[in-house]
Image 1 (tube, rainbow, N blue to C red):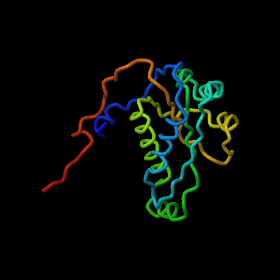
Image 2: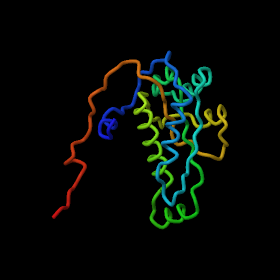
Image 3: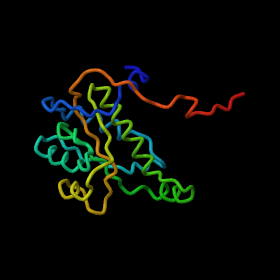
Length: 179
């Protein structure tokens, strides 16, 4: 699939088929895509906890729900929890000098690589920032001092077909300064 077809296929899935498991190989390919993502000063300030066991996935889904959020996650067969790791000294110093959160940017880039790799394999994903961090840390092997930044649901969509994308127009988001 060419790049522009790939990015047009990727969407946030909120209706997973609970009867179609995701293979270890598919998840590994997603992680490989994240692993090779660029990062500031090659810091790679991320690690991933993969949950692909029905009973544990159900418990993770519970940690993602609350106030009506992420109810759909109960049908999601697999999750990838994105944990922020300590950035290299040069990335941290550069971030302080330039008032930038490079680790957060890097995690976003790695996550984009991961979800696009999933899409390329026919999988659907949803990147979630709403979760009970403490409950997830109690459930999974994540040290208390680490921060969970995102949880990515991974599975097969229950329905075929894409929703129309609602995006701002190019003139709303871009200014061209050309000769």
